[in-house]
Length: 133
Image (cartoon, rainbow, N blue to C red; front, side):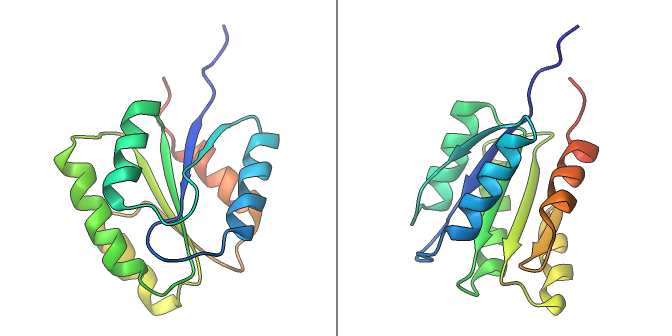
């Protein structure tokens, strides 16, 4: 029996214009057998959630270097709830101070991967936490 590939949406929300790290992650996850959709730069929370709905993704991964991760996480999680997306992993990665990890998780973010996180750590976390279909 063939299992369905894990579908991951990688998003760059807000004015953050640096996406090299996001692109490295995209290629890594594809090499790990996942389907990856990339929103491109400067997306809104609403745009990201609509793409997640249209593409029926399992994971939204937000790459953020701008320092606005907590406010964006709160807006994103609110919009996800409004659109009734269930069983969705939400991951944040990038320049995230240790002290903000708890704030992101309180907002509903499933996993937080600061810029020093290993690619293997991210893909292993996704595989372990995406609900079986």
